[in-house]
Image (tube, rainbow, N blue to C red; front, side):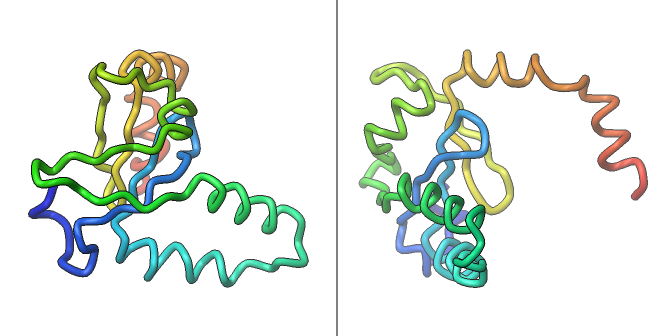
Length: 127
């Protein structure tokens, strides 16, 4: 993970709530260069925009890797994602971010989705 990070990330991520029941980790440089400018561009006179910015930032917390490359996920995010302290977590690379899931929660989420073949055809079929 350390090798894939830009030096500008300073071995730091912004951890926040994911769209489903997971924790999302954005490299600090991506958060500052992509996410924050997009949030600043939202219309704070629009209620949905205000609520979204508040929710995303409410959960956001900077976390830095330790010498072994581990990240301590903040307790509110651990509880939100249903992670169990001392138990395994599933970490998925999703291009510009990492997602941290409770393995059983991820399995339940995946099983509740359309089958992969149909989804792949709908999403990627037109390429």
